[in-house]
Length: 417
Image (cartoon, rainbow, N blue to C red; front, side, top):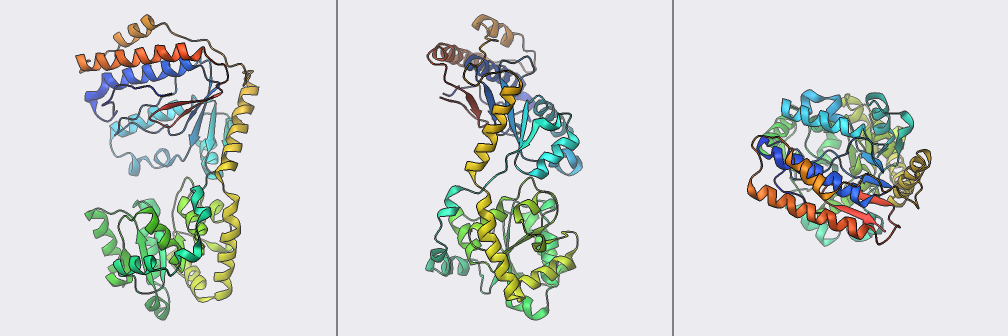
């Protein structure tokens, strides 16, 4: 089931104040009308620069709320990630909402520990569920990816002419692109001459210029370090599978998905020993201090130069990656939510159905919103359509008592029957 809420509600634009407030009230009412056992919030930190509507109402509620916890990176480094007061205020509001959750489901043990250390929420309310790569990675035929005509054409299109060390992530200071470039520049001269470094990420002009300067500072030529810019998923898999080594030098992650993707493609992996990366890499001898370019360079040289070590990394990747699956993530999440329901005396088979607000009361709540600029006629019409849709939910909700979970993907509400 879906509910259509007012559009143009991005919180970063003050002109959207009335619509954003109305959309949150309508969202909360839609959830209450459906009376789920649990609302699973898949992505809470949305809606600053887009029209996503997601909110966690204050208690009392007739249902439990479980929220996926990805990381607290902006909270821990606000000067870098929350550059203006509007962003800080919005993020602080989202943190406050997150703390209203009955459960925080962490995608890594590291994310869980950050939550326990920095959020005013009970330790037992933060539960590790993990994460995984897309299921179709497990179905890839690695023999078809390596050395095929498509791979050869792709490498040629990016001027990749030698065996290569690869990294991919979003371009951000904490990803440590410059540190990896510096480490590559410190490889033994002969080894460096035989390899290229391939960095796969979307870059604007400023980012590209910054990396070109790092390349020059490391004593490298442009052809030694390939900046591919964005590539499609199919091309990314070809790049993973044909790399000699994948390196993930991040300072701070919530999980570290590219590590798993590279492993699924049969590529030896080295990674930082900070935050969540060691959980995903899984092998202590494959980890390095990302602040130490010499240590990183020495481990890269070992992986490229010692056949036995390289083969051990490859075997480890093939075994370790199978410990991460979405089935296991789902099982842990369901177990955590069932435990939460048991603790709060809400039966999964008999969800509470209180807190239903009459249509006229909801209209009154919307009418009391005071924002500048106020609502235009089109805004009121959109809100009226949403109220009508919500009342239909109430009628449909009487048909069956089997619904147990309301999942929120940030853009729609889906009731699981």
